[in-house]
Each structure stands twice: as structure tokens, then as C-alpha cells.
Length: 344
Image 1 (cartoon, rainbow, N blue to C red):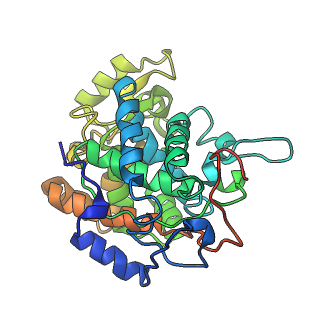
Image 2: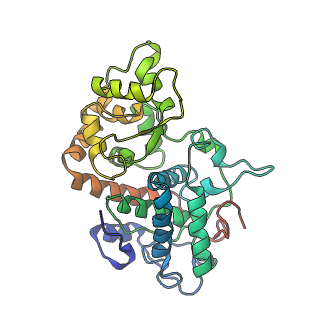
Image 3: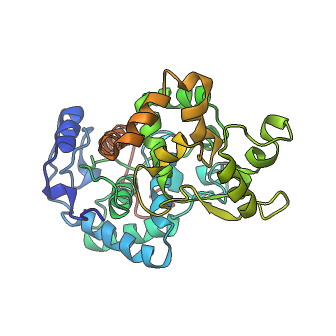
């Protein structure tokens, strides 16, 4: 398992790249995010205002994982779904109340996105240690990196300094990249947030751990594209296995491993599975099997399948890029929420 030491204390090539990308790293003394003028994100943002932020979040996640082995995959998914709607601003965490409908209620999130109580626990622990300093949006970014690293994946210097947004977009959340999207739609949705094909493939590699419901594969097993036949790209042995797990009239909400080989480990097996037509979700297998993938995403899948180091480096850099989608750093537009589910 990878080291769980704080990225604040190490200098890596990724952290250097991240610092270059951020351009200006303002060290804030005594006021936390809420007192800053509009600034760029930086790795050392909380070094003076909440130096134990990483360790505090890490401790909460380690404790949560003892009773919930799915939590690491769930937390990185929260970060994804937050950043793809209005940017990385914690908007996904806001609760619905009269006159305000949250992204939580959107189809891709409702009864699907999970891990909110762990985020709340991390926020409570941080508020006890350094009140009013660490934003909920930054907690999501930290939790994603910690979740990957504790599962055997790469670490990276997490850029910090996001403020929490004051609104939510259920309409935007309805259009998140989805399990039934074809390669063209996936490409367009990633391009819309300035992420390229390598980012698409690398970030899809997060499906190397976690669980998924049967309802997302039954059409591939029994009625692909309305043909009453299975998906021809699905490996026959794997299809037979999934048919026992997800029978035609079985429980649509029954959970299955996204990666049947190492379901709780962050590694390159997601890509070796795609090479063998063993992708659980249609959107995953499209990266290798779509006719348009031959000259676009399939070569990237091949590269990552043959080199875990290449995947880890690209994944870490893509996570840094994704974390830079429209962050709020201007106090006139954002805040550090006291509770992640409500604006102050």
C-alpha cells in the first residue's frame, strides 16, 4: 500500500507542475480562505492557518473505511461530480430546502452518490481544529487524493484554496458523464470543462475500484441497443459471470465490483480488463471498443494497460487539472461554509 504521508511535506514533479499551473501561490497568514482576495490555488495554502488539515481528513477517512470498504471510491466520485457542475465549489454538498433544489436530487446523484456523512465528519473535525478555515470544496479534493493513495494509487500535491459556492445546479448535474454515454458524448462532456482525451481515459481509470448496481449492466446482458441480444463487445466468460450476479429479473440494485480482479485496489487492472472486453459499464468499454476509439482513446487504454506507472502519472496530473475547473477564490463570490450542507 502506498505511503499515506502528507503531500504538504514532499516536493514532487507533479507538485512543481501544479505550482507552475497555478502561476501564483499566495501564502495566507491568519485568515484562511475567507480573508483572501481572488488568488490562485496552491499546495501550501493551509500551511499556516491549518497545518494539520491533511492529517485530520486522513484520520476521518481511515476510521470510516473500517466499517465501509466502499467509502474511498465513493469519495472520489463526489469530487468528480462536484467539479463537473459549476466547477470545484462544493455545490454538490448543499441540501435541498424550500425554493432551492440541490444537485443531490439530480438523477446521476439521487440514491447513488454517497459519502456525505464522512465529508461532514471531516468538516466537523476541521472546524474543531481551525474554525472557519478549510472549505468543503477543499475537503472533497483532499479526500479524493487520500482515498486513492490509501487504496494503493498515486499521491499528488493537492492544490488548495477553493471557496465554497453559494448555489447549486440540478440542471447541470443532470448532464454529468454517465454510464450509458457513448465515446462521442463522453468526449464532448470532458471537452466542455477543458479536459482532453488523455484526461478522459485517465480519470475513467478511477473505476478500478468501487461498486456498481446491476441496473447499469442489464441492457448489455440481455437487450443491448434494443436487439434482445447481449452486447457483442462483452467477453463471453465475463458475461456468463455477470448473468449469475445480475439475472434478468433479479435485484436491479444488487452491487457488483467494477473491477472483478482487484476490486478495492487502485491499480491498472481497469485497463487490462478493457483489453479483454471485461469493462462493466458500456461507457468504460467504449474507450477501447467504439469504432472511433481506434485512433483516439484505445491507444491511451493500451498504454495504461501496459504501464501502471504511466497510468498513475497521468491520473495524478488529470486530477490536478480537474481540481482546477472554475474554482472560486474571490470572497465576494464564495465562502468557507460552517456546515457543508448549507450556505452560511
